[in-house]
Length: 114
Image (tube, helix red, strand yellow):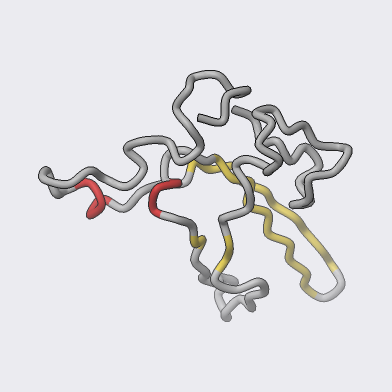
């Protein structure tokens, strides 16, 4: 299903469509970064982590935008990625892996919150 937060501001407002009628924006904003601002090293790289619940892996596609500036020059780059799961989450054959069932419902119809 499409993100109900059409204007992507994290608030259920007039610009959004609560498709399933549960008065909550789905999928919500459960993805955060380990650092809001990073500084690149001498080679131009910076590391950070994308943090999200294990059961969201493979169920959410995110747009990750980086903005940079150097000596008055600015650039922006956005990548769209499906959230991956860790291989170790899927190696125990005796346990259900996180996200086996959608955390956003399994009705097969976006208008049904179940």
